[in-house]
Length: 318
Image (tube, rainbow, N blue to C red):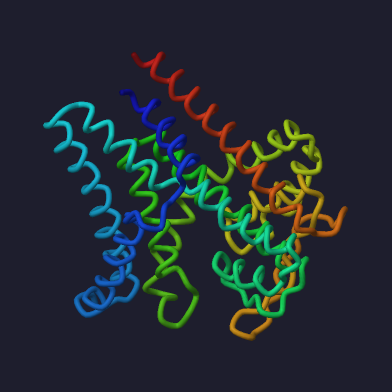
């Protein structure tokens, strides 16, 4: 089985079954390893920043090496076994179905008129305080989650799978998990988490810049606002604190004609973020499935483009 078919099979598997809660997930193991290494690295390496760098290298290297070894060992049994391992690895790095499941659970609670339950559900996928959010605030949180996760949960792992196969996809997921574990601007992690945050920014740099314009194409296909998507992308894409997340967020805000960003609360403390997009229409629950539709269309476009480029390069080289 070629890498192209492995990727297609992995995406199909994710769309069919998502991430069952009973199934052990590599991300949990990566997070466990990262947390177990933190204190030993802090003790062994005097510089906090250097300790963070060593931790990143150990965790990402271990994840990539483990995948390489698993595929090689499976290949000794049968080539099909190696293909199955490769498909399974790539499948675990893509989270499109899970993103839809979580965000649509918020949508269903809003449509049912249960704002309290919608707040509880959206709290599972965002870091802000949700207890006082109104309907529009809950919808904004869910749409922002879908917009940001379109890159790091969907297209970025596919990018690395296309470029470097299952090993690349898992190494990316390790980097992303390290950022989620250590990439905070707190006193504890400002220096130790520096390498995790910077490497995650670097890993998402190209995927984000390929994905964001494709959201505009997806908007055209779905009858949304492609011109506004590209306009808001150019105008507001760099307003976000992250050099990457703001791009997909701006493209989706423009495609939906809504305004994202603004005031959030974190542990009771207010944080005013730059607004992204124009409030052409007020935010509503219906924008959650609309954002998911854009994510799915963008996934298809990204996959088609990436595999076509890969095939073209293979033909030129071989």
